[in-house]
Length: 342
Image (cartoon, rainbow, N blue to C red):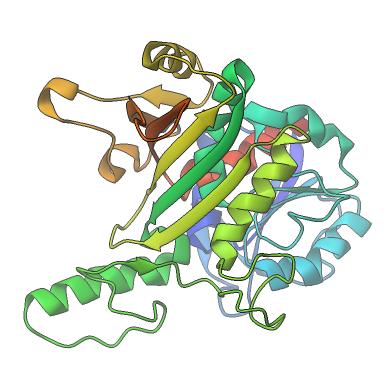
């Protein structure tokens, strides 16, 4: 049955990707309402061969709406999602605001899609780095029992939004020409550089980070720890993360060091991942060719490769993972959650 759908943050990178996926996957839409800030209201977006005018988001925007996709930031979700639920809509929230709420399911459809049925009007979409790690990790956990994971992430500009991507382009060109560049989104030189993630750092002050996080973790790293535990449930493995910003436009990469309950073979790991939903093994060892961000950009699967035994630790293996942060890390997972509601 067709649904009346609203998209909050329709003018942003994730909002635009959601619209493209709704069309690509033939999501059954009766009426589509696009919502954004007053600054973006009045602009038009093409969808299904028609130009749709973006409306200003208000508390009265949700009358008659069945499903809301919210991707405009945590403060916007905090203010407006309760109004959508009160109006009778189900909200799939792609911000951090509701993820750790015990009354809100945190869903990756390939892992815990059945939990979506327990919603009370809101379903949360996990952080992009969590999704990209968890999709290949979960089938390995089911098959062999994972006890711990250390993840080093290499995160693209897309995770900081469209403006950060544009600044990376402009700064790269400026520095290549010997010119200075003044950036506004990323706090450090981004072109030809990398640095530990610029999310708020927990130095023990509640004003600076989640008070539940361990001191020394940044917000991005703690999301991977806490969200994975919630998604996997009681037998979730221990997670440690080190998140790094790298000068890549789109698609995050992660180096996973995984310890199992017992020793397994590289061949067994390849077999499980070769049959895992949402995962694609892509590599050419003879030519030293492994998944790269340019391979993952614009596609649905999480790419995996470079699987090898860690000789320093028993029952432990390394895995290289690359996924499109805007697509599966945000928009696609959000649309897949909404498809569960159908």
